[in-house]
Image (cartoon, rainbow over all chains, first blue to last red; front, side):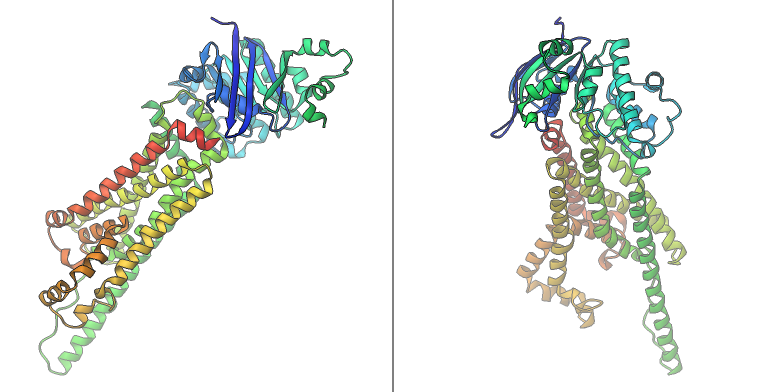
Length: 245
Length: 323
């Protein structure tokens, strides 16, 4: 069994003549919190969509926990949790009804006990019978995390998880990610714009520029490799010329 | 199969709490109720005119009066069937479109596609859930119709009448499921949600409004209230002899009409409810035997539409149109 939770080799995706992701090769070891950085349109969401089986690669390949996203997609789906950017869920359904729905789709026959555990873990009690239409953005994001971890995935994909959150929501999310990674050893792969969050949350990073991976390494290693730079932000601008412009 | 039931169950729960859906269905129930009231008022005015005529005849010493107009309660449902044909089909399209469009718009489709579910679970669950919703709606509308006929229509509904209404309700259900499944399939296939809605509405416009209307306009018997031949005092045998001279024209007119699923539904329901005079008070097996081709076509079209929705709403097409 491979030690890498996520492995890609030459992973590519094009839309007609336009290459969204080009020959992406990377390995994310188990237990890492990996942050994928890049400017808007760099290919971050396409990468997550390829790894979560939402898109078929047009070149190369990828494995999650040693299973091919193309040939063994059903098993990949069993082992991943996913929180898309700005997902809205079903407003007319209560928190319990929403989570029961996604729990059953994830193969949990009687999900109530597991939902109770997850809500306790997320410190989110007392809202079970409240409809999601009344929830704030921060509360919805917690619902998103809850549905993503219900089936105890080994890899969690988060697409811009802090998008639209207030500072309190950002802090809550950061603490949740650290707790999930620390207590359960879940590998986290997240796209984000917030470099400050990457510094506080991630153990390794990758930087995409126009669909190509221009940097990949541990956060500590990256910071050490650029002693002249004061912060990850400065390193990022140096590695991603598109942002520097 | 479990995934299919999960999706269907969620659909039922979601729609039960959808205010817009409840308003649309309540509106449909109200217009059906009103159409029965209008039909009943029309019959009462006919009866009053008849009674005045008979009183005048009696006063003038003339002994022989024509037969009194007779109330056939199920004929009061004509307006309701026409509303279901047009507005019901439109609501069915809105429902089918909405169920897929909302999943795409709010991002829940992406979540669904990353779950380890059967590739037909989404389509099957959606269509099964919506069909069940329509079944409940049809039962409610049937109860409203019968209630309206008995209360404001003043009619007596026999067991045979109830059987006729029940069979008709079954075909109403088929008709509504046809339009909903069509809209589900089109919305799943389309990358742009607005395009799917436009295509569905164009199909509705052509097959529900335009084609049947052209056929109706081409029918000479529709040009005079009460029928051209009746107005001219032409007997049925003579009418058939006249029409035989225009067989080619009538073939084109009929061909146009039967190219519309709506016309199949209308002919079938009008015959079953006795709205079409030729089938009024005929035994149910006789009506069904005469209407068998329409029943088969409506059923086959509904099955085809459900198959289309299921085939169009696979993981692959949803992934393609989602991205």
